[in-house]
Image 1 (cartoon, rainbow, N blue to C red):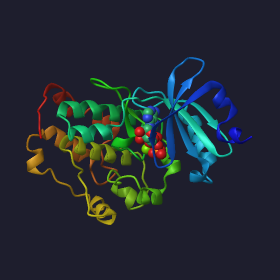
Image 2 (image 1 turned 60 degrees about the vertical axis):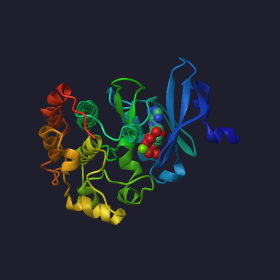
Image 3 (image 1 turned 90 degrees about the vertical axis):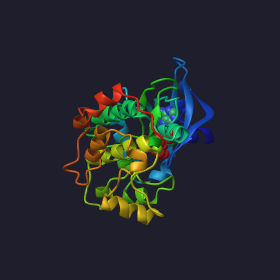
Image 4 (image 1 turned 30 degrees about the horizontal axis):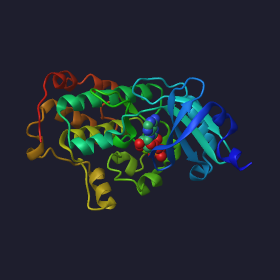
Length: 284
Ligand code: ADP
Ligand code: MG
């Protein structure tokens, strides 16, 4: 019957799906659900197969690999269902909202807070890269807080899916926000791997510290030109109070050539993380 088409029998047997929408992305709607067996709450991501036509098998194969991924800074995959029309992905619930929202609220972060956040992103990225998973779409919208409160845990979401869900054109045409986090080699279509994620971390770190993005343009074409030139500045007005160590790590992350760009494991050893934990300079 109609209902079976929309919600697979097994999903409804084991989970109660709430009407509450946690968020929407470019390919999915995310709802709150409860495991009937344990009472635990999870996020249910529903991807309409029409939006990924021809790539469904790739998606489910990739998701089965991702079932094995287990790291505190990566949203874990718990369960997976598939029907004729949709793929249902059940993951850890991150009820603290997006880093994007927090950034809009706070405008910028202290070095101490930014270091706490960036370290967690890098821990997650290092883990994914160790497992040969490249995220490709790291940005504050895809970084979610586990819960609300002091020193919340930050978790990467949407990992591994980007390879399947997004091709070059999708990135170019993305409707939600600016694609300002994308690495130059992605735009230049010269092949890209793990280093693209480190570039994005560089853009995120820059943005967290000063409250604006390193690359910008009046329109998307101008933005892409700016990224492809790879030139950015630490404007005195916003950056004079920010440590040289922070700028050094950003320079290593926003290194134009992917071969020379710092890796996640190398970045985690950068002295900024030690020094920023001990100072709490307020800026802006
Ligand atoms: P898309 O791949 O379409 O971009 P996302 O996985 O990014 O979809 O999810 C879209 C939005 O739904 C996120 O930006 C977030 O606000 C919300 N969301 C996603 N996963 C979770 C989760 N595990 N817990 C809570 N909210 C989530
Ligand atoms: Mg997303």
